[in-house]
Amino acid sequence: MGDAASPPGQTATRWVENATTDVCMNCHARFGIMQLRRKHHCRKCGKVVCSACSRDRQTVPEYNGLQRVCDGCSLTRSSARPSEVDEQVAETAAAAVAAGEKVKPLLVDALHGVAVPSGDDRQREFGTLQVQVIEAKGLVAADFNLVGKNSSDPYCVLQVYHGHNNGPKVRTKTIKVTLEPRWNATFSFRISRPNSVLRLEVWDADKLDKDDIIGILELPLAEVPGCSGSQPLRGWVPLRLPEAQNLPGESTPRPARGAGAVLIEVSLRDVQPASHLWAYASPLPQAPAPLPRFDIDAVYGPIMHMVDLLWTRCISPILFWLLGIIFWSQPLHSLAALVAWNVGARWFLSHYPACAPLGLALYMFSFSQFSSQGDCDDSPKAEKKSARTLVRQKTSPALLESEDSAHQAATTTSASGAQPQDMGSKLQEHEEYEESQLGSAVQKLAFVLPRWLKDMLRGFQPTLRSTADGLQMVHDIFVWDHDASPYVAVGLLCFAVLCELLRFDVLLMLVGSVILLAFSPLMPAVTGTIAYLHWTRAKGQPHAWEMAYNYDEAWSSKDYRRDHTEDFASSRQPNRLIAHAHTLGNVFSKGSAGKKRD
Image 1 (cartoon, rainbow, N blue to C red):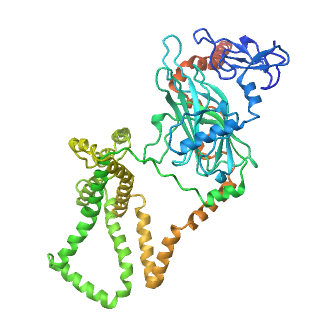
Image 2: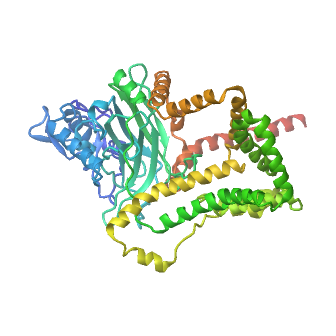
Image 3: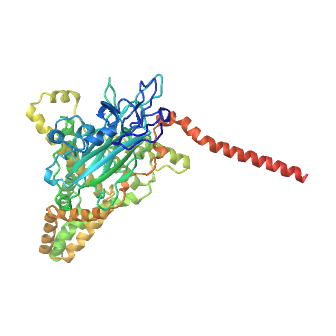
């Protein structure tokens, strides 16, 4: 028998020999006695497959009765006829997910090619995202084996999510005992939002315990081109370990290493231009986030944080400064304020609108002087800046960065011989922020509160947290401790100049119109149209995907490298032998040349 196999769905004239392969030609699972797998032949394509990949029985013209066929040949026949029952199952799962219920992932083979609904109104869906998960390589070994090599039982779970309106999850079948599975499964998702994200998770199936997640992949779909003018996106995309995901507040993606990669093919099909443009110009509203778990400290902490920012740092200093001027606590300041008030009211009344932005800009520039000064311990300005920074650290939101980067920076500085600049404060920046908390006795008593009061406080928790973080960001901007501080200062100066150039009534009209138009539906329509025009010019794979045509061995996990070290060494052995032969040849040639000279 030959080694060539027929395409899926066609009757095989020649079978692949058993000795040709040691793994299943469908899922890449290894055969052997310890894996308890036998080799089988598909009666249609002739491939060598395992029993898990050849459970279906069909009628083959060359044989009598029902014969064994692989999943590839079985799906070729069944996927051409999606039934109404499969569509109803997908719609029911999407409605349950939209209602907030927990739904198990749907099996992709059971859908028979039916596209998974988006969970939104079907009239707002503008296209179908087709994803083919071909295979994976270099996965993490989650199962310990006393006899053989450590391995996993991987399967893939895919979901298109956008905020809190997510579609149902769909999964592949499980491939037993392998770190390089081959699923060759095709998923279809209906898309209703341009900013959707495709989330791919690789799990390890366990019978006696909960399944373990061993790899995560998130692909933004905003720049996926339509298939009408371009080819589908195909390539290897590296997976990320669950612990390598970005924490809240982190924007810089961490490098994807040590979890393997997945070979996928993504395409956007059946795009309706009018519906697609409408999805950009009039985006669907985000569903409200689910209420968090009741925590009395999540209410008390942000409230005390806002009290500290508003009263202690803003209102209280201004109020006591004004009272000191009014009650002549400092006669020189009060006298200067009296003269400035009368002179300004008499000759500079028209310049009063520019005083507020100009005063705020000067206040910010006063803090920028501390930032520009050297961090010298003997400088009083540096001491003032250090004290201000430490106060801010105790009231800022939680810093979730790890302490390893701080210690690594300290080691690098000391090794380079440079003078450490306030290394204690730099290490302190990585400490987690501890908000004001109630005692354990009060926390226990809080659970006795009525149910309606708990639900009301749960609804206030996200608002209080967002407000406290927003006030902290505003405080950091005005004390020149934020990246946006220079831009805000320049904007205030420009606004002060604008106040001098325009009349006060024209200025009020301009400011009011800008604020109302910024929050009107016109702004999303303009920005959405620009984004749609940018999408029409998108070609090739998105840069954020990190997709490559070839697999990179640097993506492999430690377990995969350890098990395949012998294979890598054997593949490099011929080159080493050739290099050794060349070296010996050069030695002998030099020796013979020396004898001739003698």
